[in-house]
Length: 224
Image (cartoon, rainbow, N blue to C red; front, side, top):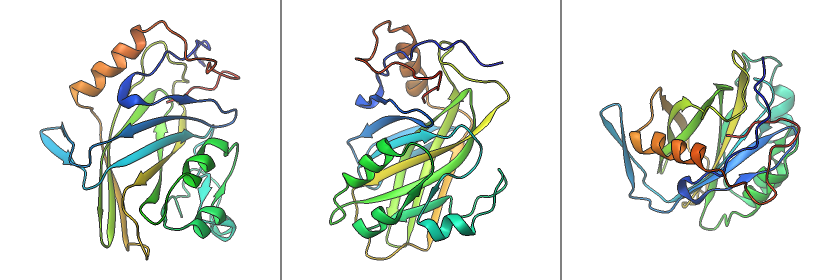
C-alpha cells in the first residue's frame, strides 16, 4: 500500500534543494571538494574531481534516459532491459540529442547548465526499491574510465514510498573534467549501508518541520 502523501521535509545535506516535477522527481545534491573522501564498509571512497549531481526517479523500473532517439529505439521494453543505461555526455550536441521520457525539465536544465569546455555529465541509471534512498559517495574520472560509488539506506519514516515496489533512478553527475572522446569503461558500485554521517543527516531532515518554499509534494510523488 502507498504511504500517506506527507509533505517532504527540508533536506539539509550538502546544500541541495528538492525539485518539483510530476511524473519524475529529483533532488539536487552538491559536493564542492574533489579530494573529499567517505568511509563505508571499512573502506574509503575518494573523488578525483569536484562534481554536482541530480537524482531523478521514474514511476516504473525501466530505463528512461537515452543518449539519443536511436538508442531508445534499440532498447527493449521491461525492467530487464539495461542497454544504454549508463553513458557520458561530453558536448552540447550530445546534450541536445539526449532523450528523456517523462517530465524532463529539471534534468535538461541541469545538463544544459554544463560548461562542456571544462565539464562533462555522467548519466547513471540503476534500479532501486522505492522505500530506499541512494547517496553518491564519490566520483573517479580518469582518461579512459568513469566510476561512481554509492551507498543505499532506508528513507526517513515520514517520506512517502510504496513497499515492494522497484523503480528506476537516473543520477546525472556533472564532473569537473572535460572529455574529447567517450571513455571505454563506465562503471558504478553500491554498498548496502551508508556512513554514519549520511544517516545522521537524514535524521536531521526528518526532524525539521519547516516546509521548502513552495516545493511540496505534487500528486503524491515521492522524492529522493
